[in-house]
Every structure is written in structure tokens, then in C-alpha cells.
Image (cartoon, rainbow, N blue to C red; front, top):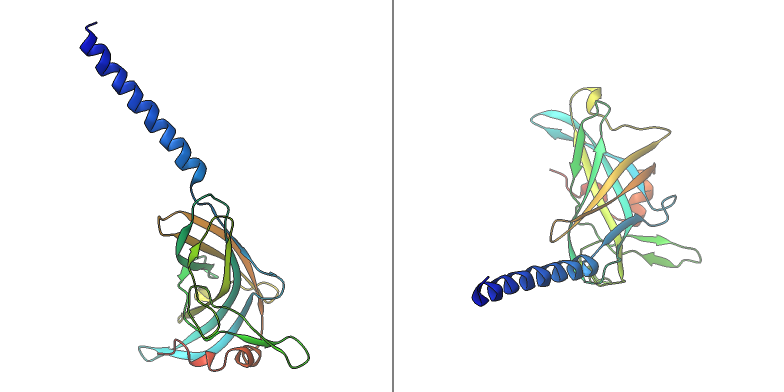
Length: 205
């Protein structure tokens, strides 16, 4: 083999090795998101909203409130791009819901003291609503979704023992996904409006 060919082959091998090393470091250092409900037995709720209307037909509406953590276990920071909720209907149809902006919820934690909660990805009077998750850091917040449908019983939400199970899927800006199961417990609309005034009007058409 000629010296020129040997040099060319050596350069090719070196570039392959260098590429493999870069890939190794990328896979080691890449962001890794974990999503989980906060106090799953306390802060995850569903509730009946006033009926709506679609093309002259009445619709059934439900609200869902989830309080979640998004944790970055990787070595690089990353921004989250979406946090959508997936539910199943009685007829086994898969429904995807996108979050809706709400005022920062408040609740009485005793002694007349109000505790305010952040809304995920939404800037408010008290919270910045950051979506950037640094390495070894978590962000948390409430997320609100509305399910509205009309038609037969097959479109109803699947409810068991007054609970509705859904899957929350978080995607980062590069499209990588993390997900968790959320079990929503039933709560009255009156209780929700005491925390978020006017929530029954949010998203109304």
C-alpha cells in the first residue's frame, strides 16, 4: 500500500473513532427528563363543567387539574416544549388534550393562610413559568385541561370508582418524550372555583 493511501486510511479511521467518541459523550451527557405527579393522592382532580354547545347540540365538559414535577437527570439543560394529557373514552378512543392557561391557583392551608401554586410554563404574578430544566433540577406546576364532547355514551370518559386515569406526556424541544400515569379524583366545581375563580368560564366558546 502506498504511503498516501496509508495516510488516507489513517485519517478515515481517526475520523470514525472521533465520531464514536463524540457520540459516546453526547449519549452520556444528553438531557433525560422524568415526569411525575406531585402528591398524586391530593393534587390530581377532575370535575364536571357546565355544558357547552357545538353546532346547536349540547356538549359535555370536564376539567382536569394536574400538579406535576419535570426533572432533568441528564448532564445538559433542556427546555420542555409540550405537556399534553391523553385519555381513553368508554369507546376506547384515545383523546389528546393540550394545556390551557389559568390564574395561579390558591388554597387555604390552615390559619387563614393561602398557598399559591405555579402554573407550568405560564408566567404569573408570583411565578416566572420557566420551561428550561437545568441539569439536576426540576420545575413544577399545575396544568389544566378541558375535555368536551357530544354524541353517544361511547364518547364519555372512562370513570371507575369516581376516578379517571390518564397519561401525561412531556416532550422536550428536541422531541424526546417522558410520561407518567395520573389518576384524577373527583372534586366539586365549587371547590375548584374557590381555588381558581372563574375557571368555569375559561375556554368557553
